Length: 355
Image (cartoon, rainbow, N blue to C red; front, side):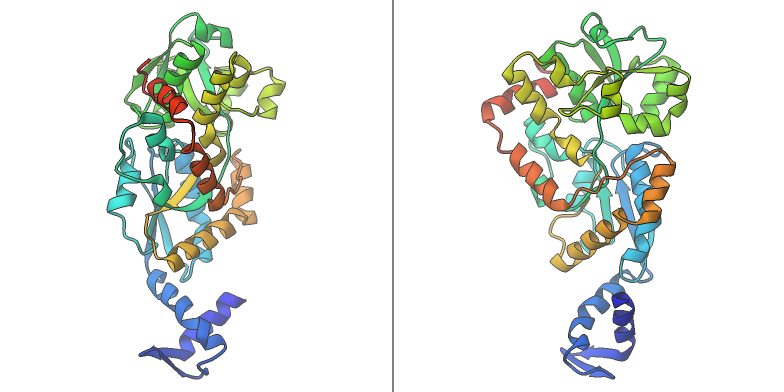
């Protein structure tokens, strides 16, 4: 109703030199109409792009396209929304930081490990996660270690007895950093084969026998994207890569990394390593977006995340939607970057495989 009133006001009002003229007085509704009208003028007949940090066909791509199908009516002017994929280590984060327009027409979904890259790798990145205009996350998931049924890996103990080849996107990614870290912290024997842009390519590589499995996929991804793997017993979940257990996996007797930790230091390192799970599908706008533009995107994102049609579509495909507000993402990052430097140094060596 309020949006309709504002649109009506846009037809009746004209702002010239800061004065509103037309059928409305300068007070009341006319006082709020110019800002809303400006937003509509910016996005009406425009195309908004949601950029994805991974290749098409994976979990991040699914959530971007899900959002794109429902978010338009929640934005002023009901713009057309399209999805573009921009895979590659930090490619999207760098693009948003230095190239993307700062008018609300482009935002993206990052891999959940990317905001922690500077902390986990110790390298100076070309982006500052604290400066991004976080919109929120659409899920909190449980990462898993999953093995192909012909690989010979059937239980968690097998991860400590011989090398398991897992796919990775490249140094600094969670798909590489998680198995490297588990090797250093817990003593597993993962061998990371880098060069796979996303989970779609990794799952295909599993089916082809190129790799034994993945050490950074998610449980809901497996259920929604490869349900036949479960029904046909083609894959086995060996380990939960999370501090808190997923109830469904726990009922199957699948342990968490915390179940394998033996010392306080191991537990501390694992808590930092998997902190990003709480913001598993994070969307962000470029840094330095005008406050009114950022507020517009955040409001539309929150409304869309709670939309019954979106929730129903996600459920129908076997996916979950858990809205995480931007304030929680900011708090999570602040706490992680305040970690004891001595622990951070150890974790950085582990994450990069330099142990």
